[in-house]
Amino acid sequence: MSAALSGRTAIVTGAASGIGLGIVERLIADGARVFAATRSKEDLQAVDERVATVTGFVGELHEPGVADDLVSAGLDALGHIDILVNNAGGGMIRPTLGHTEETLQATIDNNLWTAIRCIRAVLPHMISREHGRIINIGADSVRTGLMDHAMYNAAKGGVHAMVTGLAREFAGSGITANTVAPCYVVTPELAALCASGDAPPRLLEVVQHGTAIVPLGRPGDPTEVAATVAFLAGEDSRFLTGQTIYVNGGASMG
Image 1: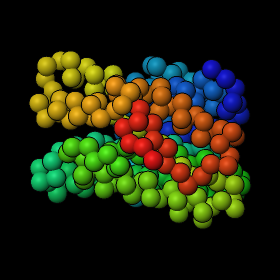
Image 2: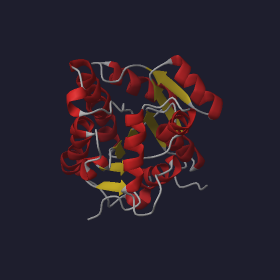
Image 3: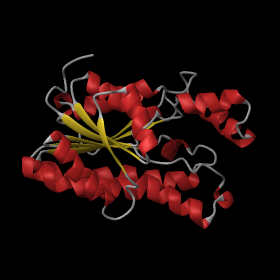
Image 4: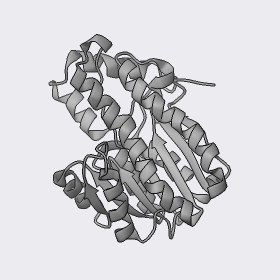
């Protein structure tokens, strides 16, 4: 697409599919070298089959110490790290009283603790270089109150709130921190599930609701989220920090 990110390096978490894979592909197309983080060797292999230039890491990033290992491996592979994209998450989407202690913990772990640990792991390196782009993937549902998303929103809301503090604290170190918050996005995996006839009726209702509230009349596409991430990763966004950018077709405004 362009050479806007030529010479830049990025770690992308949750890179195996959907939005994460779209981000990996877009950053590489714009000239960046990318280190992909996934939860399994099979997931990393799937990324490699789509994008042969990617190297990567496998681990549960919410666990103490694993994000430090990720950053260390990323530095070994890339030499330096300019961009961290916290895309890893996990949609434990269910009614509030339908959650268990285990699903509540997984929702917070996957969406909030993973981002916190990755940011804390990469910050010393970015501070030492006086440059960095931290980009979190949040959720438009934090503003729209999409059905069955209350507990998920509790985790993603923390991701949104974190960037304001990071932006102010580390502005003097040349680091920006922003969140990209998509509405319901059609990933190949979700589209296949909905088309298979095996999707739970409640999930189909959530998908229908998520589409119905979008004034542009359709869900988002991973490439549209990736385009916003690519902008925030580059130099044209250097005066933009502490913001949440909603990629949502107008589902929430203001």
